[in-house]
Amino acid sequence: MPRPSASFSTALLLFCLLLRPLPLPAVEELKAEFDAVCGKTHNALNLSAAEINELIGRCDALKPRLEKLGPERGTERKVFLQRLKMCREFYAFALSTKEENCP
Amino acid sequence: MKKSLFFTLFLLLLTGLALAQTGLKKRRPLPHEYGRVELNNFSEKAGRAPVVFDHWLHRAKFTCRLCHVDIGFAMQAGSTGIAAADNERGYYCGACHNGRTSFAACSTKDQPATGTCDRCHSAGKKVTRHYDFRAFTEKLPRGRFGNGIDWEQAEAEGSITPVDFLAGVSIKREALTPQKDFDLTAKVAGMPEIIFSHQKHTVWNGCELCHPEIFLGVKKGKTQYSMTEIYEGKYCGVCHSSVAFPLIDCQRCHIKPVR
Image 1 (tube, protein in one colour):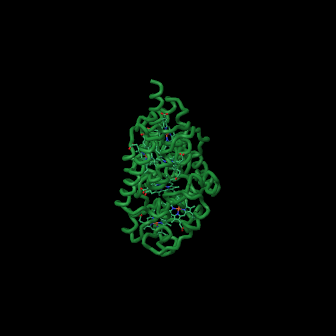
Image 2 (tube, rainbow over the protein chains, first blue to last red):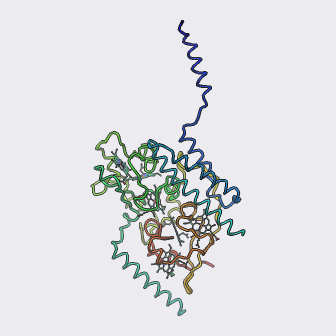
Image 3 (spheres, each protein chain N blue to C red):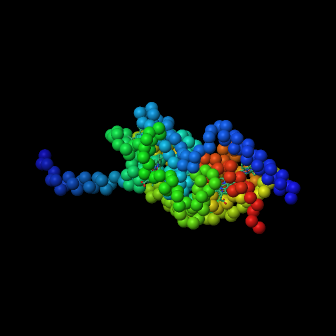
């Protein structure tokens, strides 16, 4: 078997790299979702009940994913679970003020 | 006329009780000690002196919200469980003490006997501080209790400008929607109204720090709380007994609203 040329190997390698989906590192993806979901707390009273419910749903979906972070990501797990808890509880509070005002 | 005299006496009596109570439990902290937190969940066990954290220096530079919401420090001394590795990875103290925003925090790899470690691991040690309380606070407006500084005034006149955003940590948000302000109506007859600016507190603390952890009540006036509970460190007492102006400053909350 003749050895494949160096340029061919490089091309093959590049091709494989391109085919591979390029996921954000897992933690970065979780952080981005956290920012998107919890960046609206201060404005929560201006959102509709449906919008707040959707945000709470996304909090609940994010929680188990954060819980799965391994020991090498123990700090992120601790920090973001704590921040998520505050954020989710505040949305629940905001929702209850809506329900209180429009029975 | 009589009623207000009665109230003044009542207030004096309670102040006396309040002072006696704090006097019995522990001596009142000196201005530079007010808001000091000593952290020792892990330090001494690992052969390091406990860590001393001072609110006066940090709150002059950053909002409560930045640290207690965005960075995630708990509102009770010792309960965050900050570890050296967390700081090293750029969280908690390490969010700022990373060698860029400010001097670097813990290292779990090399353990130099340098003075940098001692700047935080300083309890019981003779460490010369870079920031001297007297010099730092000299030009700030005076307050009667706590740090002896009127922090609200200091901010209003621009002597301090606490930062509310830390790149890479804080979430980029749209502008804050102002909250309508209200006074809290006293439940006890003859008591003056209690002033409380929802708007100002939101800027300092952020909604999620107070709701629902500290104030669960959905409708204004629904949560029933008393001065006794506040003295126990609940409700307003969470902040106004250890970091914001202390409870002995009765008149700052119990004043008649301006008409």
